Length: 137
Image 1 (tube, rainbow, N blue to C red):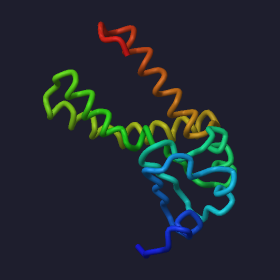
Image 2: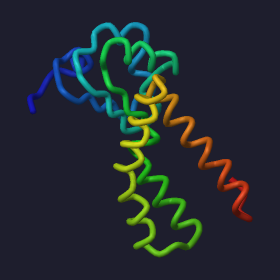
Image 3: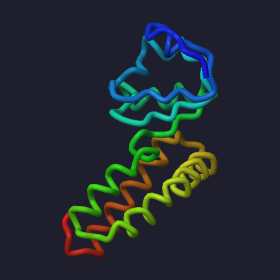
């Protein structure tokens, strides 16, 4: 790892860029300056617009949606809310890697962006929860 100035963070050559805390940092202005292989956005919608996921794909930059890669926080809060044991939350959080692999497989097989694949998986999970539970999602 090497330090860089805040003004050069997005344009610094790197393997993995992990924008967090500020939403929309990947936008029409910054997308052309990116010199990373992967964007693993940890929080707050790093893409200013969903359509930028397609541009990242065209540029051969792998984008992992923030809500998929950082699902641990939501798993923790949801587990506490439902009164589930800590072990159950840890078990679910341990599955995040498998979820990301599935997102990548779907995107590759269906020739869609990773954002579209993650959205599709999330929508399917929500629909299943609505159909199979007394808890309203």
